[in-house]
Length: 134
Image 1 (spheres, rainbow, N blue to C red):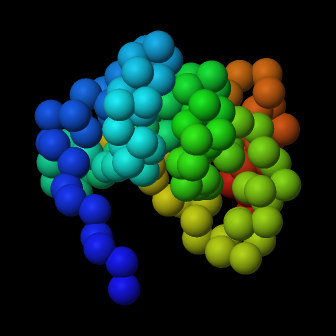
Image 2 (image 1 turned 180 degrees about the vertical axis):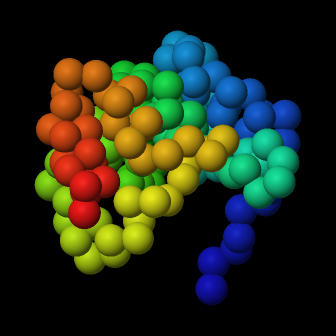
C-alpha cells in the first residue's frame, strides 16, 4: 500500500476551483504549483461540491475544461455535455437514463451545461431536449 497524499491547503483548493470559472492563466499557475489540484473538490456548503472541471463546465469555459482534462481531470457527464461529446452523453444516458435529471455544481442541470457549450454542443442540446419529450 502506498502512502496517501496529505490534504491540500483549503485556501489553495478554494482559489483553484474559483479561478477555474474564469482564469486559465491562474489555473495553469496553480496546477503547476500543485498537480493534485486537478481533481480537488470544494464544498460550497450543503453538499454543493465542485471541481475545477465542474466550474469550467457550467460556465462554458471550454479552454479551461480541455486544459484540465489534458492534465488528468476525471471526465464527467456535465463536462461531456458542455464540450459537445454527444457519443459520451448518449452512452451514459442509454445505460443510466435517470442521469438526465442529475444536477451538477450549484444545482445546475445537465441541459444548462450543454447550452453553455455553445455551437459545439448544439447536438447535445438537441439530444437532451428530445429526451424531455419522452
